[in-house]
Image (cartoon, rainbow over all chains, first blue to last red):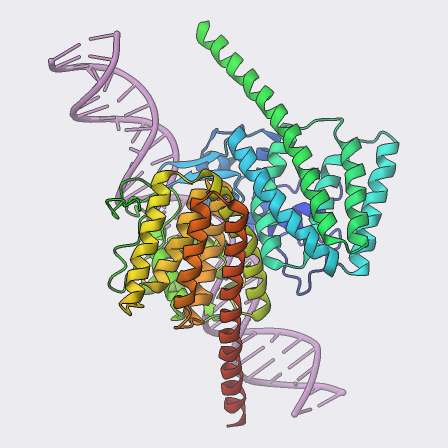
Length: 262
Length: 262
DNA sequence: CAATTGGTAATTGTCGACAATTTTGGTGTT
DNA sequence: AACACCAAAATTGTCGACAATTACCAATTG
C-alpha cells in the first residue's frame, strides 16, 4: 500500500522540490501545502528520493523496476517515470536496455559538483542581494534566528534540513527561474545525498556563523561580498564532505579486501 | 599552427562538424553515448526536438500525447518518456493531469537563461584554459579555421551548427561532468530554440572574430581572459536575440489584435 | 584453466485497454 | 449578458500482458 510517510515534520522542501514552482512570482511557498494525491509517480518519487539519500538504496546499486513497483504496490509505469525524474536529479543513472543504478559517489564527481554549485550559488547571492524583497529577507532572517536558538539549545535535529532551507531561500530570492531550476531541480538532491552520507556533526556550529554573515551582506545589498562569502562557505562544506567521503570509501575498500581474503 | 588530421569521430569527444550538410534529422546527441538509438523514445525525441526548435510545434502550443504518438506511429508510452526528457531540456513544460506545452519564449526568461549561460560558460572557459588537452585544442583550432574559411567564402550555411560546436567543444574541454550535463543536457536545447527562431544573419562575422580571441586566450592558458571574453561574447548574442525576440512578439501581438477586430 | 559459445532466465521496452481527472459545452438562474 | 453548475467528451494516468534485449550460467574448446 502507498502511504504518505512524512520523514520530516514540516518538510516544505520536499514537496516544493518535486514539482517546481508553478507560482507566478518567485515567492517562497507556504508550508503545509497538502496537494496529497497528484500523481502516483510524484508520490513514490519522494519516497525513493529519501531512500537513496539515506543510503537505504546503496550508492552504485542496481535498481530493479519490478521490485520497486511491487514494493510500493504500483505498476511499472509510474515507477519508470519516477526513475527518469531521479535521473534528472542526478540521483540515478540509466542506460537503455540495461536499467537504472543509484548514482555512485566518487571524489572527483564530488569536486565537480561542488565547484559548479559554488559558482551557481555565488551567482544566486549576487542576484539576491539586489532583488530580494523585504518579505523574503525577513523570512531568511527568521530562519537564521530559529537555527541559532536551536543550536544554542544543542538541538541538532533540524540542522540538516535547516541548511537546505537556507540555501533554498536564497536561491528563490535570486529570482532567476533557470538558475532555480538548475540548482533545486537538478543539483540539490545529489548534494543532499553526499551530505547525508558524509555528514560531519560539529560542522553546523561554524556553518551557521557563516550563514549570518551572508545574510548580513545580502541585507546590505552587497552582492559581491555575499557571493564571496557564499563561495567560501561552500568550499568549507566541500572540504568537510570530501574528507568524510575519502574515509568512507577507504572503509568500503578495506571491507572489500577482507571479504576477498576469507 | 598545429594541424590535426581527422574531423571524423575517433574518440567520444563529439564530432558533429562535418556532416551537418543537408537538413539533418539528428544533431545533438545525448552526452556520453554515440551509439544508434536503440529505444523508440530516444528516436522520436530527436524528431520532436527539431520540430520544437524550428517552430513547427509553435512556442506555447499544447501537445497532445495521442496525436504525437500516432504521428510517429508508436504508442503513448515512449511518447510520454520523450516528453519527460524534453521537459528536462526545458523545451516542454508539463503539468499533472493537464498535459504538456511547448516552452514559451519570453524576454525575461531569455535574459535569465543567458545570464545563467554566461556564468556557466565563463566557468567552462576558465576550466578549459587549465585543463584542455593538446588534441582538444587542435580540434578547436581546426573548427575555428574551417569556420573562418567558410565565412571568407560567404558560406553562412554552417554558421549556426558551427557556433554550437564551438561552445560545445569548450564545454567538453572543461572536464567538469556536471557542468557539461547542465549546459548540454539542460540548457542548450532551449538556447538553440531561441537562436533558431530569433536568428540574426549578419551576426556571425563578428562572432567568429570573438571566437578566435577566446581560443587564443585558452591556448595561452589565460583562463581569466578567456572567461571574460566568453561572457562578453555571450552578452553580444543575448542583445541580438533579445532585439529579434521583441520584434517577433510585437508582430505576434499585432496579428492578435488584428484577429480580434475582425 | 581461461576464454568462448550457446541457450535460458531475468529485465527492460512497448503496446492496448481501462480508470481518473480535467476540459468543454450547454442549461438555467440572477 | 454574466455567472454558477452539471453532464458529456476529451485527455492524461495507470495497469497488466507481451515483445525485444540483455544478463547469467553451464558446457565446450583451445
